[in-house]
Length: 119
Image (cartoon, rainbow, N blue to C red; front, side, top):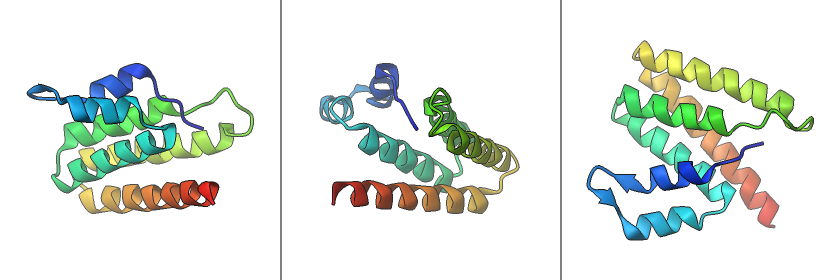
């Protein structure tokens, strides 16, 4: 459903002061599932801070990571893309509560899926 590039992993490992070695290592060694949750965490935190630019950047990363080449995930990816684009529009309209609710629910759902896969 999702694929994350090495560039995404490295870009997320940097902050305004340069690379934090611990964070960079954690991200570079993260499973795709953990990385997805980290992007959600970042998007949620930025939405809470009402940071339009960073929230929409995280949403763009989620969109770019969707897989449309697999028949099994194509329809879900289309639905998620529309939902993420809706969130981007709502951020531009300053409807932070709507975006926060959607992102939080999606993160919780993905987390439940990943936990059930481990069982």
